Amino acid sequence: MRIEAADGTKRSKMLLGRWHGNLQHRASKLSTFACLFQYQPYSAEPMPPSTAAQTRRLYAFEVPPQRNVEKPLPPAGGLVQAATTVSVAIDESTESISVGKWIDADLQIDSASQDRSHVIRNLAIAIAFGSDADALSGAAQIAAHLSACTDRRSKDSLLMIVVADDDKATEVKLWTFPQDSVFQFSPSRRLGKGPSVQATEAFSRGSHLRKAAVFRGQNRRTDFLSCRVVDFQVNASARAAADFWIEHFLDARLSLGSALGTKILAKVLRETVGAACNAEERLELVGAAQALRQSNREKWSIASVADELLREPARSNLLAHPVAKRNKDSLFSLDRDAFDKLINFRVYQLDTGVWVSAPFTDEPEGVEIEKAGDDRRLTATGLVVAETVRSRHA
Image (cartoon, rainbow, N blue to C red; front, side, top):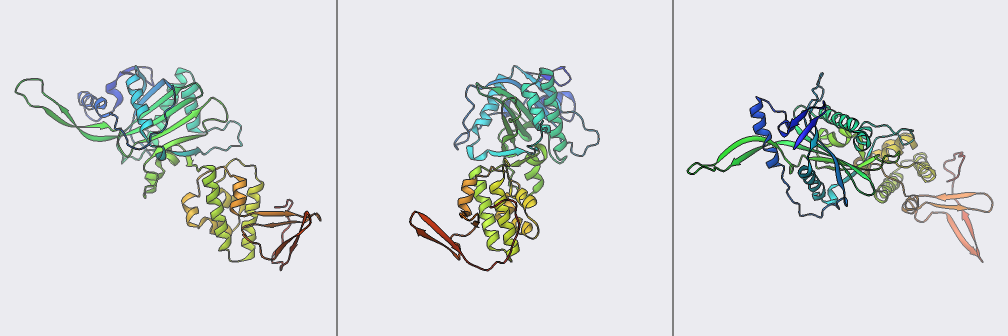
């Protein structure tokens, strides 16, 4: 296996790592990379592999931690030549992660922008669809970006970038493996001489600190906007560790599925309305629900609902909900039909031109509906406690 560096020079696999000490010492350490980069099977249900995917490009970089370094050094590495064995190992690493460990993340991109520019998206597209020179440059820039995001208290890591094609789309896989302290065992081949054991460093495929991001799509405006992520520290109590991969490196946010996200938002809204101190705050929350039903926006989060549709104190009260605190930045597509059912949003249109709406109420008090042949007659009675003028009905 050989590596073509970002500067175009050829480097042996010894340069997968950049170690302290002399070249001989570095070479000795890096030779254990092939031994330690071994597949450890998982018993959980595997993630379905990409069918008939063919690796087209593979890059490897040793990434030193250089966060807040004034003049950072470029990570050593580049294009891996004759990379079939390593490519298979990466595929095994990807496919061995159980389905439940993969989480969806959306890059923080303005969906209304024309070019949908984003650092990671732009570089991933260059690596997948650009010329050889553009792809190599993009890979080197991702390695440099990862280096600039990594706290200097961390050890070096190995960044692997794989581009694979199948008959439907192209995948770009980003894997990072942390450096770990290991023993290297060498049996003696000479009669009467015992084995040797060396304490050294290598990149661990089985580490709990390994991370991944997989982009899949075609070279078009609507693709590479989100990715599937593996990050075992995403729920870590230390926010620096929890936010490092998804928020700082990928510049992304966790994404919820449409059904779960809609259910969570409806629950938070219903319970915040139930706890509202006065009619004005309740009306504010009901208005937010009405705006959500009418919006054509592609994705929402609880935070965006609070920031864009609510005023104080309704905004703070919504975000203070325990479920909102855990999921406020997660994006999801709103299922409007499910949302209406979950908040029990009933809207009645009368032949007089009047609209009557009753959200968040299982059995609206003071509303009576009587059958008159094939028609129904609605009667609503109660005190007016608030009034607002709207350009559109609920």
